Length: 208
Image (tube, rainbow, N blue to C red; front, side, top):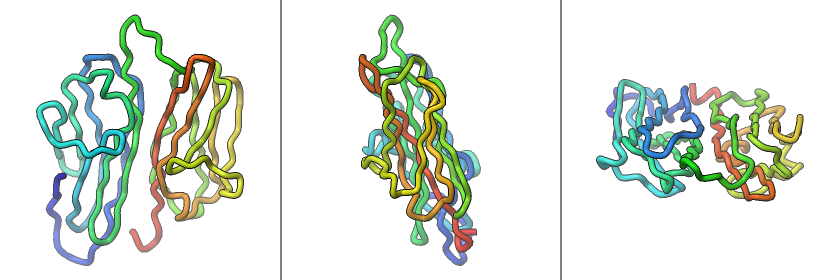
């Protein structure tokens, strides 16, 4: 965990203005995850892999460049696939960003339809409309959308759509604070499931 010193004053929660980016990477390649965070008062940073805290080490380096917070992985391996989360928090509140990294192994066919367009994390305002897009490499038989490990219910106000056998979307017509959370799209075919995780942060007037 890393603490970022800031000027003293009325405490405000950190705000993520540039989120982590999901994607596919090659086995053995270097990877840098970047999150841009704004805050007028001090806050702490924590990086997680599949919900477990990552300790800064030669294999996973915490770095800071101004308002950019980086996790550098000099050489990524298949066991490093999964969900990465950057959490920023202080006494006033928290913000977080999640992404999915798929590590491709040469000559090994991945299970599931695969993902070519990942839904990306975002920070937005209450009342705004947002659409998350998912595109699979091969046709998906089913796509399930999940929030905080629970399937999304129709009563939540979220709308799912299917443009083709490999293009899907999740739309939230009017963002509420209750929509804050970590979301996952699970695309399944006869070989298995491919997953993409992303987060939604919501700002209120009090956060500005």
